Image (cartoon, rainbow, N blue to C red):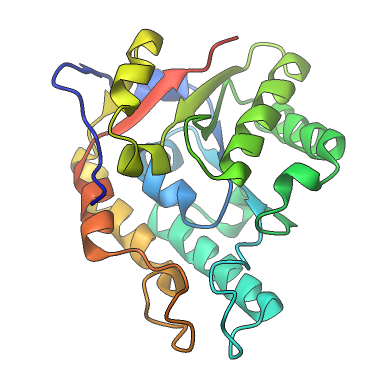
Length: 240
């Protein structure tokens, strides 16, 4: 059984310390990662200096056995879900960049063009902090996104990359021992908890409420959702 890991001793940080007093940019490998991993931080950022969510893939591979929801239709639905989720967190459609690369094939895309696009967004938004999934996450799209963030940083003077764990918090019981050397920081969802839950709930295709003809497709359990809503979000400065 999975679980969201929180170590017994963790440095709690204010949201302002994570935004750096400027708009933030969050890289989401798939639609829903932004809400699960960074929902509270995004809710704070949208209410203060602003944020940009860059969705790397179209999320179309979550239900490969569905005939009713072929990839193009599912991708369109997931794009709308992302917009709704960001709205729940206080953002708007202009705060979302949809790169739309094929789900599961991010590492095979033109990564140079992706890096250039993200770097330009960071410069345009005046971002100081860029958030990317932790390399400890097992999904290759997450790992590719982490690598891309590392390539973006040298192209944007003054930007710092932060990692946020997602799947590794759920399925790697040794995660905390692996990351304690990075000085992980905890952000209590606190007053943003309801907004975060609403944002996750907006991703209906991933909650078993939309796709009915693929029982083997991906579905977030209630236990999974509750764990990410209730537990602190975790971030650390990515090693240079």
